[in-house]
Image (cartoon, rainbow, N blue to C red; front, side, top):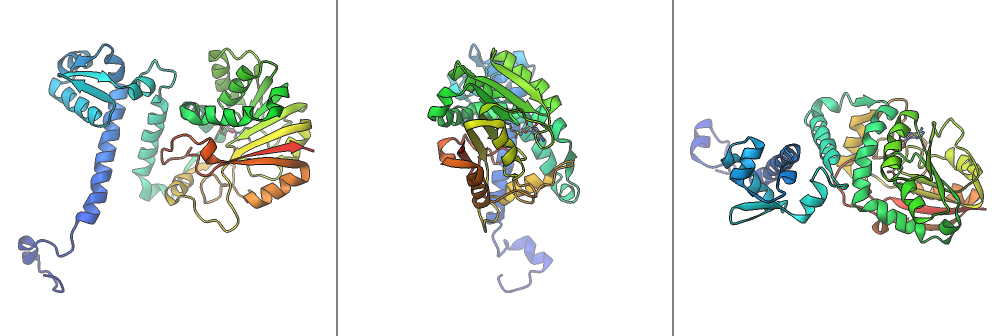
Length: 360
Ligand SMILES: C[S@@+](CC[C@H](N)C(=O)[O-])C[C@H]1O[C@@H](n2cnc3c(N)ncnc32)[C@H](O)[C@@H]1O
């Protein structure tokens, strides 16, 4: 049939000359992916992984969940295929990964990460509209919820690896005061004080956010961590610090904060900056994440088009050059040393760097 204009009648008899498979294989992947996600999400909401202690048959589980046993069996089979439950002789049990990350009583429970993914799917499902009218959010309102997602993700590996990079610095063990600037959940500050018994740490963040930081300070019994409420662009961030730790913040590449951070440090103090930077001439790091970045607009902040970028940000080369006027740049650590697992969403480490700079 190729080369001929197919008449409507011929379409009923001859298969299309162009195979739909390239399109259908992409759509199949999407279809399976979303349905699998929704199954996992429903299983978490139904506390299915909690109920699998002790292991249960589909019939037993169906009684606890109040759902038809055949549908429960289907869910268990889908979850088994994904490695989240294991079935033997008709009895299902949670696997190690779901015990760690999908049980509500686990300290590594990822429920809020799943909620965050679901919320972003809702925005993406209205992409045609959202591209024209992005969601405007207040920074403080957004982060008071989002720091909990960040905490859950960080606990999956990035937190511990980042802490290891910092504790390898001899200055860390001499430090008595640390500022976790824009520290959000405060888990970095908390971890640093747990490791260095002489260290007192301050988590500086917006007023509504630090109220949520306090929950982590309390949960971890971090009695040498305090919170400071303020806006790091406009307010005093304090002084006399031995270390300023600055991770994934709107001001991470902003030149105005460099002299302010420098002034807040003691002589010989360390500025540890962990951010995603762009190099001169670099384009998009990931077009899909650039779209996600543009679907969300922080009120009052001048966002750039590329993920994590803001107007006025310096390029990596420019930032290092600026730093060198105030600090000795001790090292630049690549993301391979500290990245966690990516989720193809806002929050991914991408090619972030940890820059360690010592006050001259
Ligand atoms: C992406 S989170 C990073 C949290 C934590 N540092 C980490 O790496 O996981 C950004 C944090 O910066 C805070 N933040 C944003 N703008 C700020 C400002 N102007 N002053 C103080 N904190 C701010 C947010 O409230 C949020 O807690």
